Image (cartoon, rainbow, N blue to C red):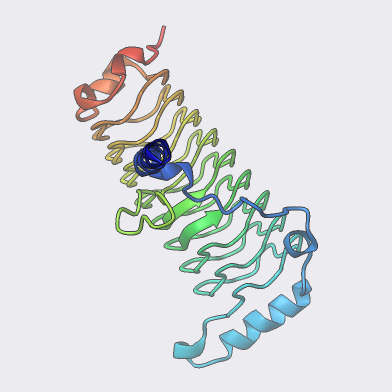
Length: 272
């Protein structure tokens, strides 16, 4: 009996000290990404366009298009205007949203795995718990957006994220740490000036020539990230993890803030 009680206590203690982000944003658990629910559409492009047009004809206070929970995977929706729309829980896996307008749209918990948003506008959009692994967002505008999405492996070459908020939501931890996840994402030449990346996960991210001026990188995970030739003027590195990160020139680093307070700075790689 004493042994069983001791074992139970140890097991409970292990659960209490387990990192909360180990289960964070794990919406993929037990989800069959090859199921019809995740790969097919219940509407055509014409159907979607008709719905959007009907919303535009409504009075200003009722002009929001409601597509919540719709299955729209693999559709070509390029160029359509979803601005201000409700796309919560919508499934857009492998859909084309090239040059689409999603300014102010609600995309919380939506599915956009392998979606093409090249050149799309998502200014001040809400992307909370959104699944966007391997999405293509080259040249997209996410300025001022609130993003706790999983963008692992996504392409954001030349994207605009000025003033975007990818920081961890410390008020809502019931599902683990919700934050912007950009593991192995391609952010070359992206504009992240003034963005809030506090506690964001940028492990192995490509940030060459990125504009990180006045960016909040406090407690961000930058392990293995490539920051070569990045603009770091005013960027805050307080407690950021720089293990194996490739740093830019000494001159660029000199313009950053609190680099001496970063973690594992001694393990970072310096330019030749």
